[in-house]
Image (cartoon, rainbow, N blue to C red; front, side, top):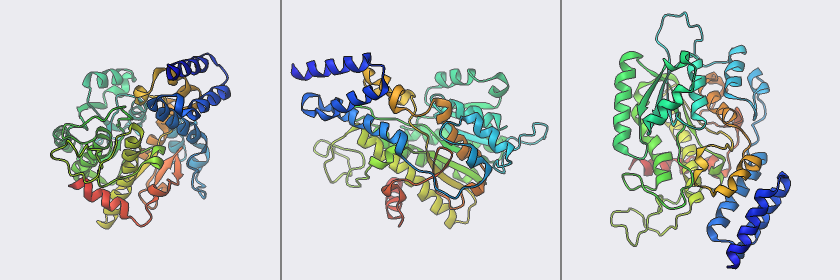
Length: 396
């Protein structure tokens, strides 16, 4: 009774309060009275508190960038700002040609999760950059509705492709179809934007193959999809994988990457019990995204390929990824925690896809706010051992 009474009173106070600082103070009261709140609410609030701090304090851009684009683009830039700035400063990637009169095949961008959130402005900017966009989505009706929100002049250059990243058979089928269609019509893929994701379902869910949903979809699905498309990616092309600031609280436990219950699972490779937490699993998947981009970059460079692989943090954005959070906390997301709107959240996606190659001289860079940034220590992986171990585990 006490639990419910205190929680209801504080929630009601939070909803009626209009001052952002007071709202933030109420949040911290809730966080600090763990004995009087449910563990589920407490854990969610702890993560929301982290994102609130991260919105203003995480990832300082690496100094030394002096090009015109980096001086004018930043946290509040939109997807269209990025395209305009790169074009005016002649810093667009070599595969982009905005001259519509040129009689040649359009460059191709393959985008996962292009039907919602930051995916929609991302495909808009890529189509405006005179690219053919393959919008990959699990829900074809939702993808069709997303395309219909764009100008008619852009819709003709967008093809919808069915893809369920939680189903390896669907990934294989989608990649085969993309290679057949785009290979025949355009020859090569110039950009692969791994944008789709699942965030923090409160209970452990499984992919079709029994992998933990976030790790299986966000990381394993994109790893497989990228590997299948790689032979047809332009040698000067780009692979951009959306990670998150959440990588900083992610941990890769190779004894049980999928949070399997080893006491009941009959086919698990896990050797150690691991309790599922929504945000712990999300952080693990986002760390895996970052390390995948670095590991892929290592292998491309070893092979002498000119393909660039990078990752990014788009910002803390109020998209449908937050659908698993309690409804009463959502005003907090918009008022305090989120630091960008959807168009601004898509800006680093677009920057990573369209900026010229020499903006990413090392390969494997991590971006935020349209600039190179420093990931947290686990994401740096300076010796490369963590990303190599992850690669080997994923390939199994």
